[in-house]
Image (cartoon, rainbow, N blue to C red; front, side, top):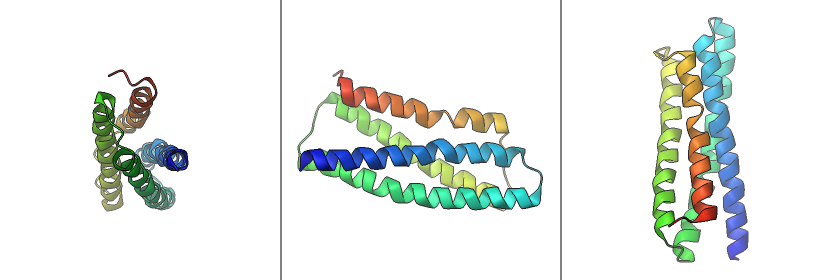
Length: 137
């Protein structure tokens, strides 16, 4: 059963991150867009992607919790991983907050800022995968 839970956890995590990789890319385009029709189309895309990404995050987190508590996984690497997962959740929340600002027309960030913001989940994923595979401590 452990390998099934782990497999589905990884599938949902990969899918969740795919959404976190693409959503800020939509924000880059929104920050550059001046056409109201195109802005509405991008906002619709962002809303749907955020909703879908959130639906993927829930089973990813629940299955991870099941692995941690149900199989007594432990170690210093796990504490570091859990701290990074909290940062991923915070990033996801930040994406939702940024979308609300775009919907209100209150964006104060440049497209260059969003390009940098778009790299954050890549760095988090790299660190998480290294911790899980290498288990350095």
